[in-house]
Image (cartoon, rainbow, N blue to C red; front, side, top):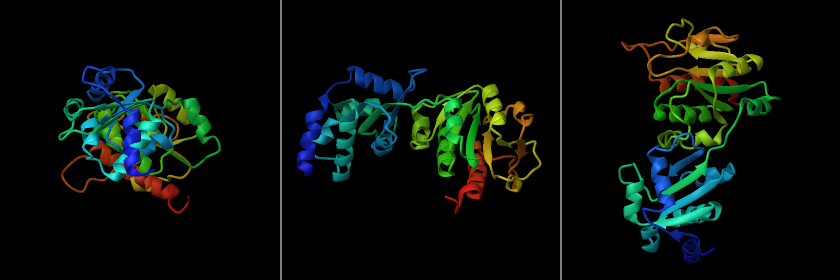
Length: 288
């Protein structure tokens, strides 16, 4: 389709709306994380369009800057993605540049807002996923508080080839807008679920996982672990670390990252990255 026709098609799809509309109020509430216990999440920008379509994730609303569309301020590549988003979303809206600034929580704002439903998974779903696979990597996040840290760990989890991620002792929802942004979509690209710690620990034991726990009390270097088979890496709270029960479950191995300077430990995101990539490279490099 020619770009001129593409722009006209977009204009025919979108509905002009204002700051008091339900769609804009919903978008602002999701950006500000004011809606609790909802499956809905929001992505600012166009970076998520192809990922959401690839994973067949339901997009309920797509909101774009109508002023820039009318003034031909979007690149050709942006127009292609805008058209994709408009065709895929259940409803598409155009708002003014001023309204985009009111919705966004970023410096300089964004011109696009995608509202979608987070996929939901259970431990039973994970059991089916790994049923015939004995070479699995999972990430367990125990009581992490900062959405940026959780998102960064999920991005690491994805990059290191992990099959799933689980949040226990939840302090921040996986639909948090900052978490989604920091994960760059990994939170909805790989199975990610929230569960209670007892159920997860039992599930890991029942499914013969080695549980690698990053622990300041450990003496074993993280590079000395055998990462073959089914492995789950546990990252603890930013301040208090892991729950003590992790040290007692079957197949648990506590490891430490040696510190060569004056500090006692790394940020949980950096620490998990090191261990996850050590495991992922050992398990999957040249094997996929």
